[in-house]
Image 1 (tube, rainbow, N blue to C red):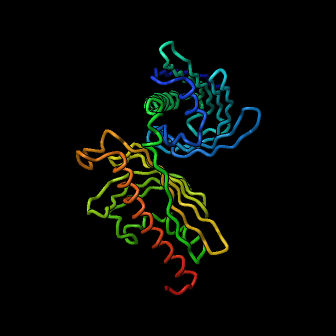
Image 2: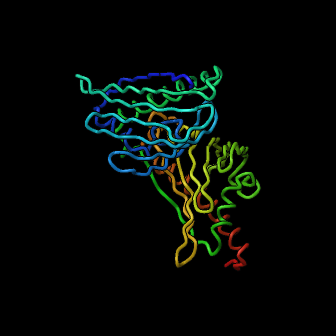
Image 3: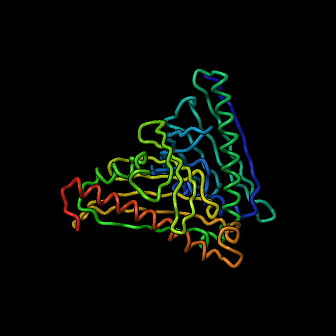
Length: 317
């Protein structure tokens, strides 16, 4: 039997324990809180338990696994156990514990237990490095998010753009998924490097041109659910943002295919004046980001619409 190893990571947060616990409980929002998390699918299992399908980065690689967790909001603990792990992890579980402190803040303790495939030293070392990096990044962002919770309404921005397509979802999906062709197909894409480390997973680095002529470099991980949805998270974001996640969704309607680009971003308040000028505000940053991202999304949707409608034999109007 493989040896069980243990790891513990902690952080002190200047925010109430209930606030911190609430961020941990809402797993579907983890990509907006935890840097390694790319996407989470959350399925209730009853009696305080749920199943999570998680995509995240570990030591520079994209991994996906299924976990089951139990929430205890009274004790402020969340226990979890991976049901389906990915090598070099053979088994992993643990507990989040949030403890209130006398000063009104809280202490967060993240415990892990794990076993490595074949108990090989190199596999144990890989997991320990991943846990140290990811747990440290997660706890730091958890601290920052909890301490800025009262500003979340101001900093969080969610919006979407939609076009109606008289064509097949498969063709729109193909256009959006084939990002390796975007430099040829989309005028605002200046450079793009694409890697597909596993089926349904992409890593891409891209330079895009904004309406003011400036270019921005982003690095993203995308997960595809053909033929109706692609989700992504930027691993490298522009200076105005601390988080950017999004989704392309395709839905059949009586009027045609609804193709939607959805964005969720968190503004970085520390960089607003440096990027937009001394008099700029968070509200200015929100307007700037909405216009920049929306313009590029609508451009991509427009090209995808023409591509799908041409393949469907629909005459351009």
